[in-house]
Length: 604
Image (spheres, helix red, strand yellow):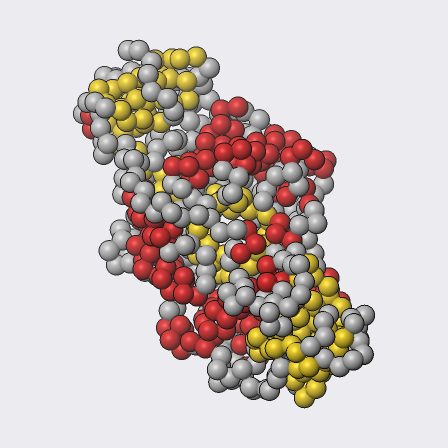
């Protein structure tokens, strides 16, 4: 049979048939078997193109047919293999690849991705977000996420970060063990379900960031393992390193970033989510383990140059094709080179999760003793940035990693007072650091359920407790107000979208900090935030202010409309006095409640 006339990898439908192409470098023969040839393992051979690629066109094969590749290697027994580029799998999980229909009819044509300075991210896990009795597993699905999109839009969310939804083994998972990275999890709704989610999100002005895992694969149900029968040292074969570089904390399945075909495979996958599924960005899991043998450090002696080069290549491809789309690294080393541009030796990511920020603010919230809170450390992370660009940092106080039971962690309110996460202290201090998330320079992110005081620990197999949304509607309103202020909905807090911060008041004795945020400066732009990290209130707390005149309290984190547990300590609008303070030209005094943040600005 002749080689395929179709372009691309995997199963490529055309009018009247399907082309098949696979890379099996050490195979002596490759056949494709499926429902279109009664699963014959010899009837439909592929032809060697060269460089280890095999292909053919199969008239009569069609969308919906199931198939596998039958790979022959005389030196070893190779079982039938799923297609590495398959876009769908059957419901038996360890079963067959499916020729998928990916010619989606996109209708949200007027959608545009939010400017990066306006992004507010909501991280969610499809399987545990809201259960769907109609899904094959009975757990969450794209359909149930769609049902909550109006709620998220009303909250002010304009980006959802969808945790990995590529095929994984078993009926539920956190997603960081992908077995088939082009196939969308069938329990969630498969390709059609994901298309519907992106469409529905875009129709409401919400962008979709997809989480990709390239630091390791599997390890379970991983047909890529010894894919064509060849391997060394009893390791993974052509898709993986076959030496010590294979090792990661999750499995010995680190892809071989130095092999051109593997690099192409991962690059194609990144573009697949952005182009074919019209996602608006990607979040890369654990990039430290792509660029470094020991992903927990920045030691250049442990670098994997091929991994670093892969990240540069993928980011370069995205920037040249769709530069408005964002790539976010979870590197957790606060390494400026992650977000430095490629021309200066960087990996070229648009932003990265801020490790110092999340760990510092969580520590400030969790410590039971007010005297132990370090305001100098807190002030230091407020102004942290990479390469002088605030938007190169994602700031957050909760995430799946920080809250995950499997990591020995728990939700922040739970960590503040285990077993009493609805207490005054847990409510106050968790929302206090949430205020810093929305007022610090950077891209703010919250984790699903954070906005209604979810406690315990997050688990991929346990449904988010939506009854807390009814129990704590005021906490939801608190988050809504913060998000609206962050996005400058009322045209009087423009500075929160800006690059600039001056932490000018650091009172480590009384545990109060104050900082000035601005974009261009002036009325409606300048914002002042005062944060009290102690269980003490002040009828008149004095701080410096950047401009004379009336400063209005736009947000009081102690208002009892947010929670009946709050003290409702009065914090009135204030008029500046003639003399300055804290190196600022003006000053004023304001009421300040316990464990409370205030947001002040001037009318335009």
